[in-house]
Length: 307
Image 1 (cartoon, rainbow, N blue to C red):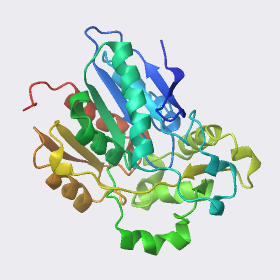
Image 2 (cartoon, rainbow, N blue to C red):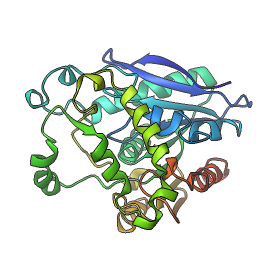
Image 3 (cartoon, rainbow, N blue to C red):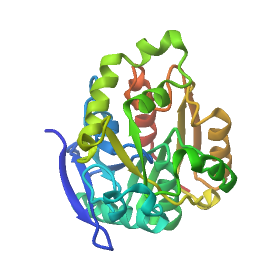
């Protein structure tokens, strides 16, 4: 067995990609992965980049594992803004579109697996999609595992970054050099090859390019990532158990930022904050990824923490 892919229809008619790997155990326990704001779920979670994928790791332990491509990413429909020059459109993604996509995915999972609740594993900016859903649809959420949750930028921070990142545009483009430089930030120079072998990065980058049908038309080859309007959910309204993990070399999810998220979860029935040695913002694809996998897996398999 391996992953299968399909599409489900969001409430506004947009089709979003949903990938599934069945663990085969009954009664079923379902997990849904949410990617961040830049890369879709295939190269980050589903595909085996340099070894066993995170999706396979969870499925081999008996879970029904799903991964969602939000609109504009991977196997999902592209908003019209992505078909025109970026400067002609505002960000096409906001809280309502993210909620519609997640609603469609969770409804399909509940129907397919016969479960009432789904655990969410979310990376980077995907953590805020997961947290908002845990507030608004609490009865559908079992657990929240947040890996490297970035703190939504303030309006002042966004204003300072907009000219460089073009965050007011419909999308931004990422080339190989910028992807590489973003990844290795924070990793000590002497640890970079051991943490992220060059061959693994090249395999991953080629997998990223394959998720965007327009990548080959750009010079150099690049991927498009739709911009979004940010909003901050009320963390103190989350009651599900939550785990936060970060790698020690992560400069996007700092130790201070992770603790800030943890502190906001005042009413979670349980909350855990874990820092793992030898990993960056993309630790899930690095040499010590199995430490991350095992840490999150232990949390997913826990019982009895709900209030």
